[in-house]
Each structure stands twice: as structure tokens, then as C-alpha cells.
Image (cartoon, rainbow over the protein chains, first blue to last red):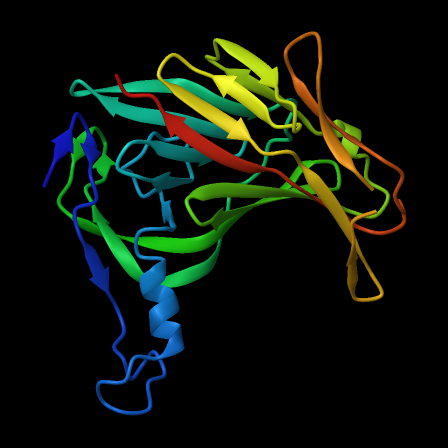
Length: 214
Length: 39
């Protein structure tokens, strides 16, 4: 187990539910549900039960970074030289409305083992719930955010309700060295030791059951 | 409708949209790619 100043690199995965529970018909048969769940073992949002900074509701972990999701935005944390760098690098939703903790959506049939800190004391290994999506409702008036995972990337959708004003959506960057817009419309946010590239946005509406991209 | 980023003078980012039906919900989808630079 590699431990870096409070970071627990993924320490293990505890799978709850067997093949039968996952819908396999025959002993030894691997169901589609099981395959889908296994595909998300390393690709999920992990609920904060004390193993993350208090403001974070969820995190997405990789070996080289952690992206914490808070109601007001996303913070990037990097392990390096035995210390956590960052905590001040990320994207903030400007004038986001205060609200409840973010709820997880689509709980996955496995948990990860982490060591939460309770009252300043790091506790023993605890099973932590994992989810495929995280929702941030009413971040702006009539606007929700839905975080998803798309291959190796975090994807977030703004869901703008009928009649709501999309001009409320504004993002600020924390700790950046520079921001630039590329030829293809992507935004590159340069940090001292990392880059966040935000792909060009696309928008659609569902009209008569079909997605219309304009 | 098309969508594009607009970088404001203050360094904040907005999303500009083309015309759309404001009586219906709308979904705007940005995707993040995070690249960690190593020496």
C-alpha cells in the first residue's frame, strides 16, 4: 500500500454481491451487469466519509491526481514529493447557490477501502460507497450539473431548465498560470504542474424524442 | 444551436449559445481532460 501524506492510493476493492446476485444464470457465467460493474472498479466517484477535505462531497481518483467535487466546483489535488500539491487548483462556478451536499446517483455494487479522519484521528479501513454519477441540483437558478465519467475523463453537463437563463453559468479558475482558447474552441487552463483541457462545449435539446443540436 | 466558450476580461468563462427553444430544457456538455506534467 502506498501512502502519501494522507493520500491512500487505492488500497483495495471489496466487491459486494456475487455472480448470482448480479444476474448470472449459470455458475461460472459472468453477467453483463457484472462486466459493467467491473469496468467501473477503477472509474467511479467515491463518497467522502472523512478521507477527503471536509468541503468535498465526492472524489474521482487516479494514480496521478484526485479531482474533488464540491458544490461550488472542482478542486485538483496532486501527490508529489510526499506532499499534496494543489488544493487551490480547480474550477469554481461563479456565484453558485449554496445548498445541500451533492447526492451520488447510480450506486455501484462495490466499495473501496479508505481510512477516514474523524475528529482529527485517522481511523481504520472503512468501506466507502462508489457511484457512477454525481448531481449538483440548482447550482444556478433552474440549472443543475450532472457529473459523469467518460473513459478517462470527467464530463459534466449543465441541465438548463425550460425558461432558465444559461448566461448565469460562469466559471472561474483557481491557481491557474494562464488560460487560452484553442483553434478548435477548447479551453486550456495551465497550472504549474498540470493542465486542464475543457473540450469545446456542445448543446442539445430533446424535441419529439430526438436530440437536436441546432 | 451551436455553443462556444467566451473568455471574459476578468478571466472568467461563459458559454455563448446560438438560438434555441427557450420553452424546452437544454443540455450543455463540456468534457475535461486533465494532463499532469512530469519532468
